[in-house]
Length: 151
Image 1 (spheres, rainbow, N blue to C red):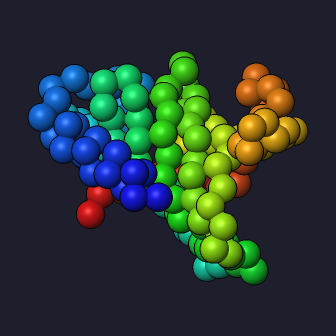
Image 2 (cartoon, rainbow, N blue to C red):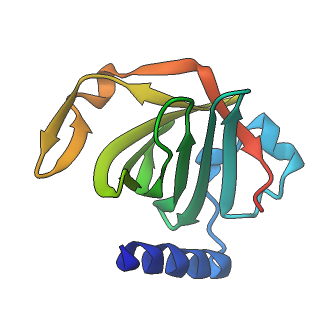
C-alpha cells in the first residue's frame, strides 16, 4: 500500500515539472480553470452520494485518487492508474473496503459536461476484476462527475 502512495506523490511532483498538456481533458467547463494544469478534479454529489475523482497527468499516463461515498454502502477510497483511449479513461482502481485491498478496472467516458462511469459484465482475472468488453459498456448519465477546483 505504501508503494501506491509513493507512486502518487512522485507522479504529482513529476507533473508539476512537466509542460506537456493533454487536450483530451479540455471541455467547455474548463475554460474557467487553469488549462495548463496537469491536475484536474471532478465530483458528483447529491443529498446521499458523493464521488470524487482527482486526475494527475504524467505524460500519457494518468494517476490520481477516486473516492465513493454512497448511501448504504461502505466508503471506498483509493488510487487509480490508467490512460486515455479516445474519450475513455481506462484505469485500475486500487482501494480498501472493509479492510480488504482490491483492484478493479474502472472506465469513465469524458463528454462536454463531465465524466460518466461505465458499467457492464465483469470477470475476475489474476485477482483483478475487469470488464469483459470495454466497447460494450453502458454509461451512467444520471451520475455525471463535473469539473471542480482542486484543493
